[in-house]
Length: 303
Image (cartoon, rainbow, N blue to C red; front, side, top):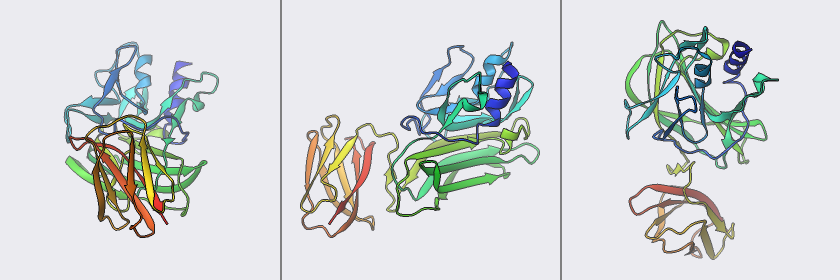
């Protein structure tokens, strides 16, 4: 039974997406040890194939996904490695979502995707890849609206990349004029791993995942402060209301050409901005703390 559960689990890790929680820990700095103590998982909604390690009588020396101090920036990055777990080829895979064991229907156990609203133009990260015997890695992201694909970007490659390289992918929008309700992000060290195909010991390293919108502003997928903008559209005055107080923060406003329109220091949970002289159109805001850390982002209309 354990082998069947693992096989079905690994088979579907790249096939289904279902919205779950907020996306955070994009820099892959935070990890937590599993209850068994045999592996660590990245915090937030990131999920892995490390579940199979608990089925081994003797834990392997290396897990499919591990934190590594071989990072592009910060202290840690994620390392994915294709291994044999419980006599089964297992691609190192990291995805946004979760895992809820369903013994009666194992293929329903993996859950992919997290809620997201926004229309990013580009998907970015830093990666390096050490394939074995012509293996290929896969990196992709998909935006969904009620299960339908809104946009997709992907890199599948067998090329050796032995130092961290900037990856900048443009989303290909299949639907326009709509806003997605969820996002899926997947990294895997063997692209055909869900078919139990690939080469042992292929390694993929990933760090600093970001989404960037059309004016070059990073969409903060893990907002530390939730912001409500109203009225939206606005004609004279717009209020940005925070769910928690932030003193000495910085609010930056940009037009659709990326030009900075306004900047102000935050003092409380409600910040009013006079937009009566702004032309009609879409505007973007970015909230930073006093140290320059991105706290939240969003957009609104002026009519």
